[in-house]
Image (cartoon, rainbow, N blue to C red; front, side):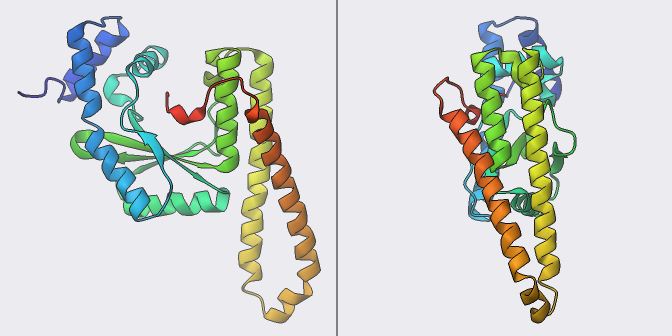
Length: 254
């Protein structure tokens, strides 16, 4: 039997029906066919990430039906335009690692689109998304986050569960939005320091050994300060998230 949801126009007709509230059995069957059509592309992408890059990957081959309907209504876009129907996530220790992984993904998936949210965050959300085109125009989104960016996203999800689902879309209680933006700015400042630190050590490695040794005390002092600040920031976020008030950014609901 031919796939009734194989063409872009057919996909978008299904999306319009969902946006308009037509949740008939036929519409839901067409949506399920469309969701399942991402499975092969998703498995290919995850396979490359785990085998070629030896990275730990979490994800889901298809966004849930309620999440798709919610996104269609919230953003007023066509179903075929949703880039994260299939998605996975890679969490790395820091910004230099993030930059390296994104570069490697760009080499492995040469037709991929890089969508960086580092300089212009989405309501405080910072990460790099790599959009990989698969078979029959099926896209797979790879989220590449640092540990700090991931903890921020988890906190945003939990605050949305606790106070208002609109929190993660830049709405809801104003004081929570201000808190998340302030925290995001703080993480950005720290991660800019990480990049500067990485650049400094690369430059240092090019100096003669004698010059490197002359700066040993200065380097050790700076490293202790850096590690202490990083550990403190990670502990604060982890302790807040350890409180059992539900929700997790691991569910790929959006």
